[in-house]
Image (cartoon, rainbow, N blue to C red; front, side, top):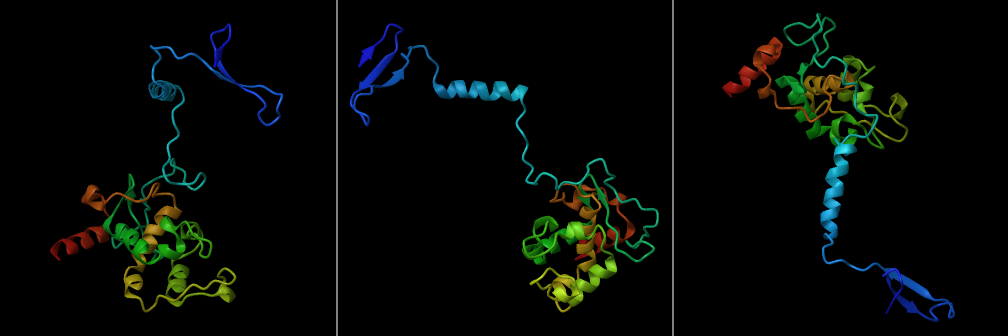
Length: 221
């Protein structure tokens, strides 16, 4: 090992690979008061972090989140106390990412029976459509009919794929309105960042009457 006039140490490896060429590996002298590398790394990490905040990973792909400026509460004036609008479509209630009991039940039932094909949070898969996007234009009647009767490629399903009929499955049919409420709340942009908060954190007095009734019925069980 040799030292040059600048205080650097280096190894000379002769006749390596090319024979005549010298290969120098420069090693700067280590000072006794030098901080450990990991301490410097921590300083840089937290120091630069205050200038360049680290990006937050919320588990959602860019471009999939809905506009947060859009109203987060469904206060439709034609929403009746029984949880349906004038057209008879099930209505959800969302406030600060908290759901009423019926919509929250839809979240639970969807992920128990539907997400294997249609993906978590209704984002779709390689063989099933994203229902949170489909319900932006799909009516309740169409959603009901397709779920109950199923659909193949001759009826609009993706080529080579089949939507099975769930008309005989009580775990789906018995909660289909609530599943629709959950998916519709995401399609409308009211439910921003699933999974939602549990409904007990939302004041019951804010719920539509049908949700209050369901809540009281469940408390008695």
